[in-house]
Length: 529
Image (cartoon, helix red, strand yellow):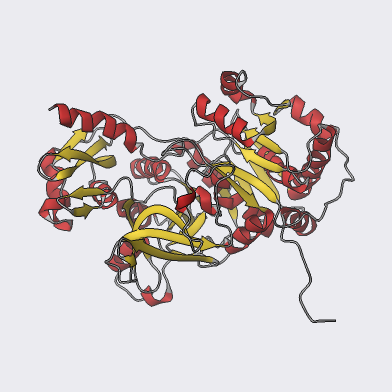
């Protein structure tokens, strides 16, 4: 005996086996298309996931084959999330908000063998079916139930190598073709465990979790795997993502944790402000916001006016996706409330097993909260390269760090604050201006619903900031009023020269502002003027 620890595989089979053994009676709830609720237990779910794993062999799926999904957030999608990896294959979630051309490219590049698709999304499948070569297409409904019925109810868990591929996601392709990222069983297991920590997402068995973030985007931030690991009650919204229906579900299911992008929460905040006494949200202890920087006004609005705690997090598809979480450390417990809100609006400190640094042309930058550089990360669940694509191999440094493309400052203690994306930062007269800081300040104005800031060409200064603004219904403000509102927070040369007022800001497939479209529209107009 050499006294070493057991060679125990950290895999998705172990996560599901634990849930089935310990939490069999806990509920899983799905909002159906008719807005009624489907309820069953972890025991039901695990049995169906195991049958699915067995049934896939009958379709000829084996040895790491890709099984694609084109689905909303619901219990059948959760079964696929687990049934495919525990069979030794790879589940590949297709982002239904991408263009048909991108979807076809992704499915072909990944080599997807099977597609499992919602009935409501068949028109999207029809738009790509002549461009892809799925061997089997299974519709959620009778076809899916027939597939499960063909599986072996006694099928048992294999002990899969933790370094085998389990899940696959693609980036949204904002800079060129979408890029594929493969996550190992080990990466999913360690990411799930880290997400239960009190300094990160803090998910436990006592929680009821409703992920608004789609299961087709970055593993729904890992919620399905983390919740299953600890046996938390899971509530799936289906396709119903409007503020009113989500608030109804938060109340009726006594949701304790939810998560989504800022655009979702901005709509919910407006509805709560309009009808503050309509919903009882006393059970909701954490509203996680990520996907893009959360305006401080959003965080303060929920907490000051509605008593709802907002947890600001940051991550990327390449990071499975959790990177940092902005929960206050003990050093800030006694700080003034204004200081605490300022820190809560930052991206926070790294999760366990994620390391951070930043670099610029002068080398690795100091953690002084002032010096800007590109954030680089490494860790237990961070990709080491893109699937079958070396076109951006230079995003990984020679010593193994991933270059995120985010321009940040890092404070002593590890608090990071994203100043901009490297492609969005505004270089004016040789100085950097943060579009993110300007956006967040503008969105603090009571009349503003959304604001995106872009660089436009300038003959004298090279680039200048332009703000594109959407007002709340029935509200308005002048360009001068908005500039005066934000002027206390910026040097005069950093202020926007122009404000453009629009009805809607175009967004990417994951709900971020599509600044490429804005630059094409307004930068060209600036040049022509």
